[in-house]
Each structure stands twice: as structure tokens, then as C-alpha cells.
Amino acid sequence: VLGNSERIAVLSGPTHAEEVIKQVYSAATCACENMNLANKLRDMFSCSYFRVYTSNDVFGVELCATFKNVIAIAVGLSYGLGYGDNTAALIITRGVAEMGRMVAAAGGKATTCQGLAGIGDMVVTCMSQHSRNRRFGENYLAKGKSLDDFKAETKMVVEGAIAAQNLQTLSQKYDVELPITNMINDVIWNGRDVHEAVEGLSTRPLKEEF
Image 1 (cartoon, one colour):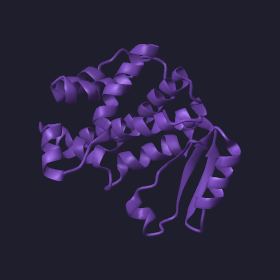
Image 2 (cartoon, rainbow, N blue to C red):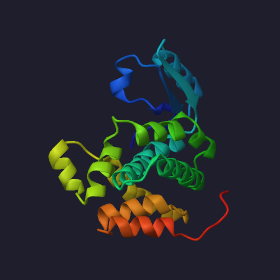
Image 3 (tube, rainbow, N blue to C red):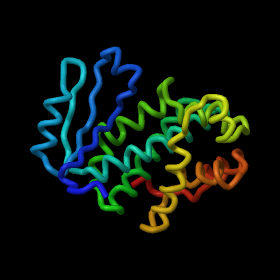
């Protein structure tokens, strides 16, 4: 649809616009199959307060950008239910593991998940006051309020809601286990009780971490 894929580039990372516009030091990943073009774009966007790294893993960067919003909803939900920073760290860490499994299975590079477009963007989206996905989980989902309630009251979208559906479909296609992502999908779209969903997640069989 978009023509020559070597002419397509993606810029992604922990870059909340509210901070970038204030020239708060930030960095991002520019991914393009054509590394010459990636380097040109890197030089074009980099400045004293904005640093750009390059990658040729366009698909991996795009999938990471999708994942972080779902995990941010889960982190917000945990805070809204009264859990603390330990739980948030747990969700982020296991969320990165889910992201890595999915990216690798679908054809991206697992190492992309360790970079700015992966864990970097996930951390800022999960923990920042600017994150509407976290806000939805914390102030709406945890309180029994719906996606429609959020849209009506804030006039904003929750990217993680649609992303959860798409990622569940991908997980079935590639036979990848995504317990946190699927839990969020069930609560938002299938009406699963929040407390039951969290209990189901926390009582999963014990196993090795890696």
C-alpha cells in the first residue's frame, strides 16, 4: 500500500511531546530498512536536546510501540486497585518479556525490545503523568468505568485498548503466551471482572523466569 518499504521510516521512543517541546533531553530510535536513509533522518532530527539512534528493525519498533500502551493500562489498573511500585515494576518487567516473545515470534528482533523503542518507551508510558493509557487503567478501568466513559469525559483515545485486541490475535497466530495483554483484553472487551482477572493472573502456575 505504501510502496517501497525502504523509503518508510519509524521514529519511536520515550518522547512525550509535552516534554520534548520544552526541550527536555530525550532520545528515540529511527528505524528504516535503508540505513543510509535512517542515518540521514538521524542527523536531521538530532539536536542538543534530542538524540536519535538508528535501527533497521522497522517491524520490531512498530510492534513495541503497540505493546507499551497495553502494559501501561495494566500498570494504571494496578495503582487504581491500590497496589504499589513493586507491582508496577513486576508488570513492566513481565510486560517486556511478553513484548520480546511476540516481537521475536512475529519476525522482529528481540534486542529491539531492550532499547529506547522497547523498554524505554514502555517505562515512560507506564509511569508518566502524561500517559492517557495509564490514566485509563488507574482512574477508569480500576473503578469499573468503561472505555466509552473515558472517551466521553476526556475526548481522547486509548490506543492500548485496540492494541490489546490486535495483540491477542497475533498471539494466537504465532502461539505466543501473553497473560498480561490477554487479561487487559478480557477486562476491556469481554467484561471480565477486574478483581477476578487480577487473581487469575497472580495465581498462574509458578515457573522459571527465563
